Image 1: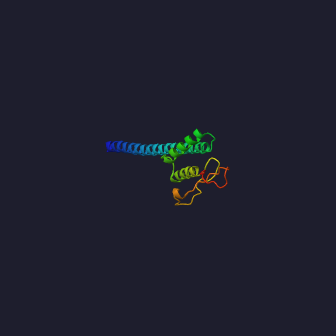
Image 2: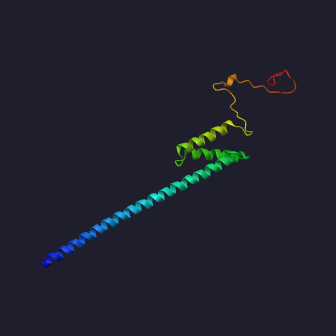
Image 3: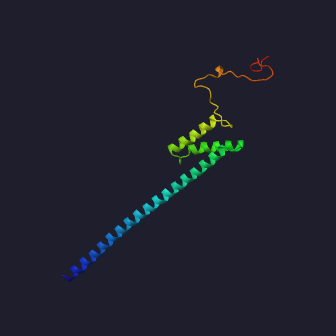
Length: 140
């Protein structure tokens, strides 16, 4: 009978060790998964912050006095609007900025004063020559 006690003690110890090992491995796997998710979230947050910095820089450049700076900033805005990092709301914001930039000239005037559907043939250009008050379009 004594050897049954020893055998059961040995089996019990082995079973207890196996259960402890399985539980420890599961805990380690959960911690590793949480750490990977945390790192992924930090990387995503960092990318979004970088997108925001670039968008802010592009907005500052669009209003620059330098023609080259304005052009480069518009290119940057287009690229930011096509980025996978941008949300749908951010992409709409980029499009709104680009649309407004296309409608507003350097003096801040809205250049889309023509009514919707107006044909170019309907537009009459009159040049003031100040020489002859009856003259239109510089024609004699």
